[in-house]
Length: 461
Image (cartoon, rainbow, N blue to C red; front, side):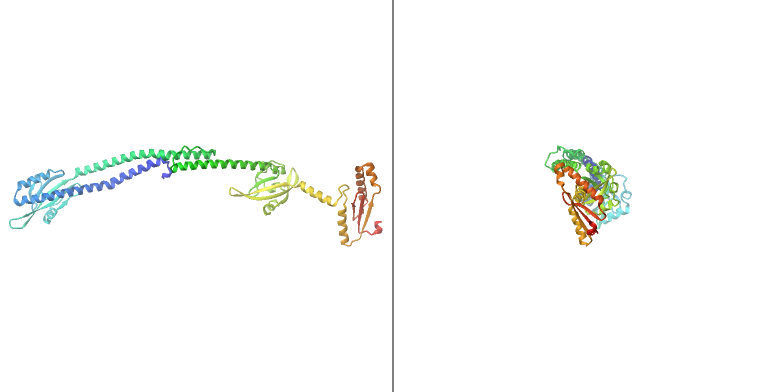
């Protein structure tokens, strides 16, 4: 419960609880114990006095000095706390008393039978409870015939004033103690506030402000104790965190700039391959803005129906060729996925490249490897491959060789551009005259070859 309160309230509350416990302890245990000890002390003191008086009264009775007996009883009755005193005989008859009209048979603290029993026993005894006590002390006397006579001194004590004084002293002690506790609590609270509460409040305020604006705070907390060391440690920690935050911000900004300016399309997707972030290069591949890509799935931008399944089944960092849609046209793409962790959650970095130029270049290379770029006819390489296939299959074939005479004159007189146009026209016309199952190729500058599949020499002529 105390941890829910501020330190400024917990210490006074603890002192208040301690004072309440002290008060309860004093009233329930210390005060009754003190009263019992006071009664015991007064009874012991009275017993010592009565023991001394017992011998003197016995001598007076033995010598018959009744006047002296009454004098000593009067002196005893004049003491503080003594209500009356008397000397009684064996049959409870009064021999001497300090109060007229008082009889032994009508005492308030003891009945006649119990009193006679105590007198006959010859032993000192006390009767009564609480503040009023009756002391019964035997007096030794021997009769003329030599038999002992049982007589006793009775004295009633009222300890009420002493007990009241004891209670007043106890309550005064309690008031003094509580006052000292209050003063001590105020002093401790003052010291507690200067040494602990205020300094911890400054540390807490600096930590809260740092959590809001992420700027290091100056801690005005001095000292070499634990709180001072805590303040120094917190100050160093805030400076280190601020420097790391700046470095992280710069790194994130650099990475963001690199991603935004990268010529390669980049997408950050979740486990469902839903787009969470896209750079401008990726948006340009699909002809839209980066914001329009956020939330899209592969099926939303790719033409293949099984695009999502293929992306999930492809190993990490393995390229996959798929087709995207951009302004109603198909765009061949090369896609790869790289998994990574962000805040403990699995994500994927998707790289996209437009491979249209590469495919056209590959197609161009394949064309140049088998066809003449000027006349669009098969070249020597392709002709030789086809010839090898037919020879390996042992199929009938014929091969015609055509050469243009005086072609060099045309190039020299009219120029190579006219010569190229002539070669193109010749290739077109020969192509129109080609029979079925034949291959026309340009094998040199002005040389053409004709491969006739399934034709004999006479038919070829």
